[in-house]
Every structure is written in structure tokens, then in C-alpha cells.
Amino acid sequence: MSKKKTLDLSIDILRQINDFDLSEYTPIKFNNKNIGWVHISTLQSIPDIKVPCKHVNISKIIDFTNQFRLSKKEFEYCPIFDFESLKPKLKFDHKKKFCSGRKFIIARKFLSKFGFPAYGVHCNVWSRFKNSTIIHLAKRSYKLDKFPGFYDNLIAGGQPIELSIEQNFCKEAFEEAGLNYKQASRAKKSTTVHYQHNERTNFNSAIIFNYHLEKCADMKFSNQDGDVESFLSIELANLYKILETNSLKANCVIPLIDFFILKESDFIPKSVIVEIKRLFKKNERKL
Image 1 (tube, rainbow, N blue to C red):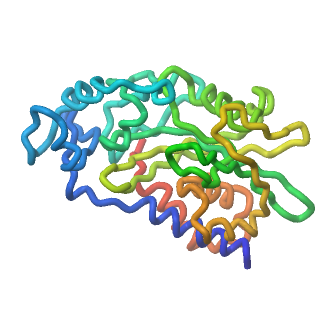
Image 2 (image 1 turned 60 degrees about the vertical axis):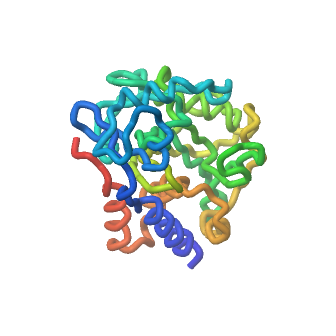
Image 3 (image 1 turned 90 degrees about the vertical axis):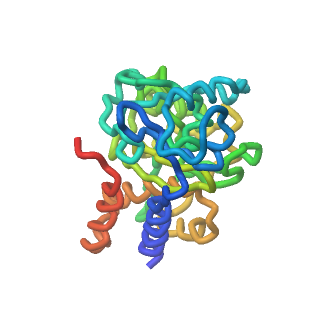
């Protein structure tokens, strides 16, 4: 069954992006919490730090990153909260400015290098055609530094400091797909999922705010910021063909699996739903 194959491959990817090893990393401390993790090879490039060491103070990391000149495209700052990197803050008011309660800010490009939690919005856009569910994806521009040419959720983007989660979602909806505020506001907020894994010497502790949006007749997708090469509409049952070629950006399976549970759960065995929920909550802090 093609739909089952799509789900099985998605779960395999979910397992992969929930696997990590910090044996070669040093914790970054603030208020006796390990709010970040830095690989020993990166630590060796920071002045005035004796390697190896048991931990490094956050102030040395901030001072180090502030020395770099950022390009206009890199000039996006994100908050660092007073939470463990392995158990980040997950509960937010999506209507309030995201930076409330932050302790530090840092350029987005440094988040995974130092294992600080990275937040973002992802939206699974879908529609019905006869008896089929259609998933609408964006193909990332080949000019992008990260994952060029990969398929992505139609709406996806990092969460900066000055916008609320909802404002950022609407901004991304317009920039990436040309959807106006009225269209984007039809999206339904869903789960918040934390996942973490190594990426070479980086450590990704990432949080996705999941949204789902049913495509309506008045929605004509049109990229506005140059980050999207094209759009693809594909039956959910055929999505495994993209997954088999590893051409879908890995974290995009999170809103897709969330959608399976919400809209397509009739064929999923209870044991599989239990595993999905376990993976979704594997890294979740009790709130």
C-alpha cells in the first residue's frame, strides 16, 4: 500500500533526525544549565579557551560570534532562552513577540554550530482531489547554501526575535508562496516538536511549530523571495517516490507525519501511532 510506504519511510527519517552523540562536545553553561553544545574542533578555534575543558561560559561564545561581520542575508538574530539545549522551551503564545524572556541573542547561522535551540515554523499545505489527498511542496532554489534543489514544506522558515510566531508564519507564507494574510490565517496550529541530531561537527537542537493549511481555490502559489525554484503537487500515496530518492528535506517529515495522525489515521496501526507519539515527545520537556 503506497500510503503505508510513505508513512514508513517518513518514520524512518524521523528516527534518523532523533539520533545524536555528544561525546565529543563541550557544554556551554549559563545559570548552571547546559544551554548549548560545541564540538571540540570548533572550541579550538576560539581564543582564550583551554581545550579540553569541562564547560565553556556563554559569554565567551557571544563575544566570539560578535566579531563576525554578517552579510545582509545572514543578518537575522534569534533568541537564546534560559533552558537546557536538550530540553528547550516549547510553550509559547503564538500571538506574542517571540523574544520575550530571552537571555541572549545570536545570529541564526551560529545556532547549530554551538548547539543552541533553533526554532522555526513549518506548514503542510494539502487539498483533496476526488478520493485522494494532495500534498503541495516547494522545491528549494539551487542558489541556496543549504539543501539546494530539495523539496520542502510549502511554508517553512526560521523564527527570528522581533516577530510573533503567527506574524512570522504569515511573512513566510507570503515570501515563499505568495499567500496573503487572509489566506495564511486559515492555517490551523498543531503540535510543537523537538528533534536533535548531529550534522558533521554541528549539533542541531531544533523545534518546529507545526501548522496545516487546506489549499483553497483562491490560492495561486508564487514565490516572492527567490528561495523557491518551483512548486509540486503530489498525491500523499505517491510521496514515497520522493522519500526514496532522499530529495525531501528531512525535517519536513515532521509536519507530514503530524498530518497523517490528524487526517489519515484510519489505516495506521495503534502500535505505529504510539511510536510516532513517542518520537514526537522523546525530547519534550514536561511543562
